[in-house]
Figure 1 (tube, rainbow, N blue to C red):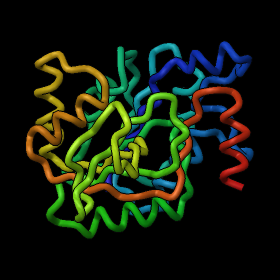
Figure 2 (cartoon, helix red, strand yellow):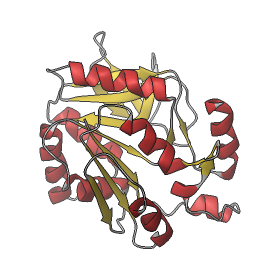
Figure 3 (cartoon, one colour):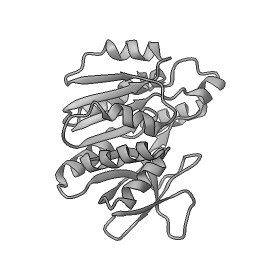
Length: 231
């Protein structure tokens, strides 16, 4: 499995709330957030790892360059206007085959991720596996509509009757999804949620894979919440 991490955000809310470290280097249970994520991925049949950081994150870049990694590692240093643009930039480094992409502040349990990877690897029909959760702890959740077979039929900004899941921010995808990404870039589409809508509009077969709980670290108070969850 090819893995990718978007760590190109500024983490401005954490800075405003007194957190001095760059978000990727914030410790969770004694380990930098990005190192914890890398360790989880390296335990799940890795083929390659790609990470994008912004141009101001010299401390993060130096930290990543110092890590001994057991697979080919691609580090992209570029400031981008959105996570979708970061995805596009880092996607240029991807090798052939399936890939899983997430943002550095997406917190989940290793065993839940391992089950997700195993299911995605075993499915030779789906174009993608999107992590979803019924635990809502996001300021602007993206609501997921699924059919009885857990195929995603829509991504919605507002809750709707019968809604069970929101996006967990972990994207398992295949080559056709990169074709859609390039078309989105060419047509001026922005934001990951609009890209995900484009995947559905393009007719891709996307499966929803439930995680019991996923937490985003956006604010200083989220650090303690994440550590409590992981411990």
